[in-house]
Image (cartoon, rainbow, N blue to C red; front, side, top):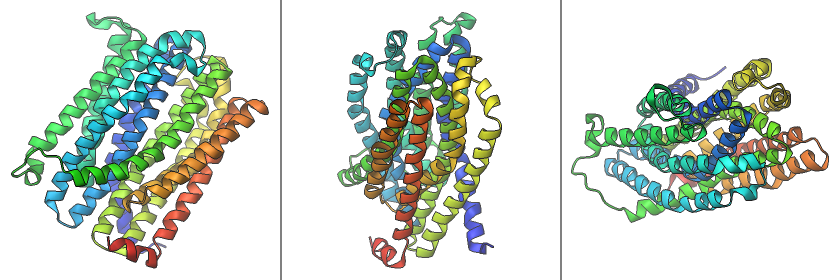
Length: 452
């Protein structure tokens, strides 16, 4: 059925993807464990606070986190070209870009903090959310540097390093959550803010450890001979020109889901909590699919560096097949075990009654979500970011959100209507991004791109 070359590519991509998936899962599980522990220990109001604050912070960070993903394919391309100085300069330049993101993205964070009540949430949410939001926004800064450094190890096909550090950070976060929320073992009892402070400390440790490991371990010694800290204007501009539109690809999708959180708050606290649980489950599978997509982008970038049209096509289609297979399994698991998955988060019959139909829709959009993210990954490997950014804007902000609002509030389908809108946007994005990739891998198109 498959050629030997394609089977080999599936194996290589999967081997590269697994530690990236685990690392991606570790990052998203920080938010998931925050919500689980907050919901279990503090109740649905605190869960609503945690959910909306994490959504706002994640929305702001998505520009940097999504944007920095363009660096790994650039490094894999330079590796295929045996350009060690460029690899070193890409590492340092990406850290400068992370610093720039830290400064620029602090501005919308400050605006959100001081204007939280304008989101129209229930009063008890307005009272508790700003403090939680402050610490989560602060934790975004070390996250940008961690993600930046992670591109170096992933691009060199050594993703297990960031994976190990991420899992350690997750364990620290879970432990810190329990100690600071409950005040056990002599720690101060901080309640809800304790979960956010734990996330902040975990991310600081993760960033410091990864950067120091890259710089001072013998594993990457050959990349740092005669190393000097410098500012490579050309590469900083190059990374910025790709990462900003690349980041907005994620921003438009994450933004649609974050605005959906706000619309849920317009309905009720129960709808808000139900949405947060359902979206946590869906985002977990999404981040795993995005790990495969990142691996596919790295393989496409490496094939580009080898100037091999056949390898580019093979790498792209291998990533598509892996994501399709994985998300089909996720779709079945979520649909069959929806009640059991929800019960992990909270024991509230009202919340569960609203969340169950949302998870049914979530199971349906698994395929669309996976195929659109692997499309972005494959196109990122070809440094194609502008058209995909336009596609995501149309899919989520022109189609998904308006349709969700119309179905949710005008036709009074409420939370179900909002999620049908999201499903439609994801499906449109998946189809258009695949069409874009299919067009770019045509021989005439690839010939021009490989000459760059």
